[in-house]
Image (cartoon, rainbow, N blue to C red; front, side, top):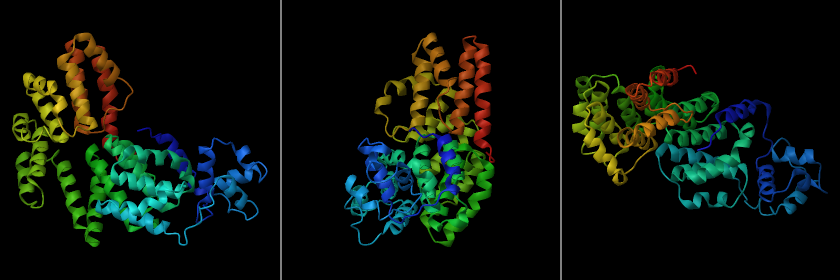
Length: 414
């Protein structure tokens, strides 16, 4: 996913300098159509208005003038743009937020009008719709069309836009970038209850993965209270489950068992996973292996714990067997693929192939993951592998490279 965090931050800082003038975004529709027709501003405005006027209109900096708008609509084939008798955009945007709150998918009839339109409002609705469908390719197409309109989005639009991008980054375990984006959202006082709930939820979910303790302590109670106030008990169950997985990093397995015994709503699989995480972080790797066996073939999160535990227990033949049949594993995420790739180089390649991999991937500039325990494992293991082959300078470079990243993940005030 190609998300330029620096560009988004720069555009976000410009939001206070712009005011969107129109309720129907004809300006953005003209811009999208002109771009699709590969016309320059000069060509688009020729014989109708000035280049400056068209540029301002396209960016919602001015109201459309009766003197020019009909001619522009005709030039770009947008005669049907104002056919709708009632503009339901704000209600529809709220409905998209409701679907994200309840984890439901709207009927296709909800979005059909917006699929036929080409303007920034339609792109925002489409981005939300495709995000709900988990159609990442279509969602990212809308993102690329929308990003230049960041300065012109109102607070609700901007917040939902950031939540959509965050969801894509979350899937790629780019939790630190996702968290930074969410911090750019407007003050909660200026947002609807839905937007506040979504922003808090995703800030916490990213914080859990990064072990960002201060964020969890500050906002977990606030989110729980808000969810209880609006009686969205399914959200409470979801965040409690995520919190327990976070808590497992710190709690001793015996204490974890006591905590889990009081959580009747958790499935057996979720209970076992929380206990396995606690055991993993307290180095009871043999017990993690036993717990993981029924799950690891179909659950990516279990596979990660299982492979790392096997490695720590030096059960090399079992790892090799899994690697040789990795094409049969289901539901692999980016991080599980990363661990599989790392272990294939570790166990199935010669010295030069291994060292080239470590230099290219581990010491390279490519983003690996923001999963704290996985990044910690890769750092320690890469150190050992470089040292094993007497490349001590590069072993030190691994520590220098990764320790600041691990500290950044935990840090609150970024």
